[in-house]
Image 1 (cartoon, rainbow, N blue to C red):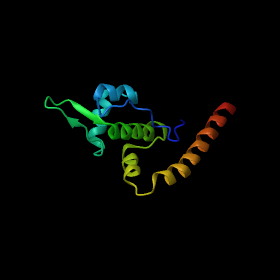
Image 2: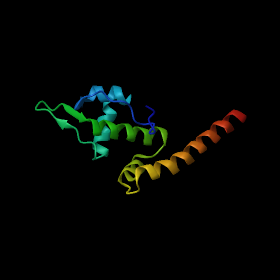
Image 3: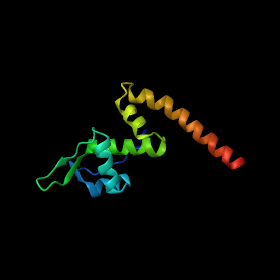
Length: 115
């Protein structure tokens, strides 16, 4: 089954993920996950009695989306926050902005090949 959102991955069938597992899935260091947790209030891992973070599937999917916005779409943290807060339906926003961004990216690649 093809995924129409490039930031989504097949996640293991678990309710909760430890920070190390999320780091492996998202290919991010754990300190970045802790920083994003402070910056993006929608990331809300539960805590065990010993203080260990347990991320839900929704948290992991949100982290993958934030990574996509910051790394691939080149959003700033503030821009990513605004994007996540926007009330525009995701499919509508994704279809037009993704197409334009893909075209821009492709044109830049072609330009770089010519230079």
